[in-house]
Image (cartoon, rainbow, N blue to C red; front, side, top):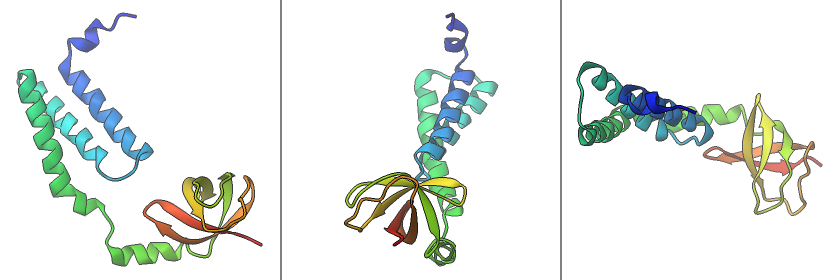
Length: 148
């Protein structure tokens, strides 16, 4: 496989790094990684205009990432008041178990068209394919209980 063209085009490299970081935000949510993707894309845009040494590229990447994190993160987060309204759509609803789990372990449940990480305080194991009631949440982890 000939990838010499990739190593000779820093704009493409920074663009791809940014793309991978932004996609990673969907896999590992936390609203942090996406800002490093923005920083990488900032470097790519600057490199379209001027050629920079590598250490300046790294500086722009870090400065752009931190600046976008500090300036934009609050705009993308939800306030506590809005979270209460969102939880009304979750608490008391049922979800289907995708990956079984027991107390002290994490499993996966399917709810509102997506897969969620879940945990339970129930002493009985929760099997795949069963339905559970959502009793709360902690960040992106749903708290569930068995439906009896």
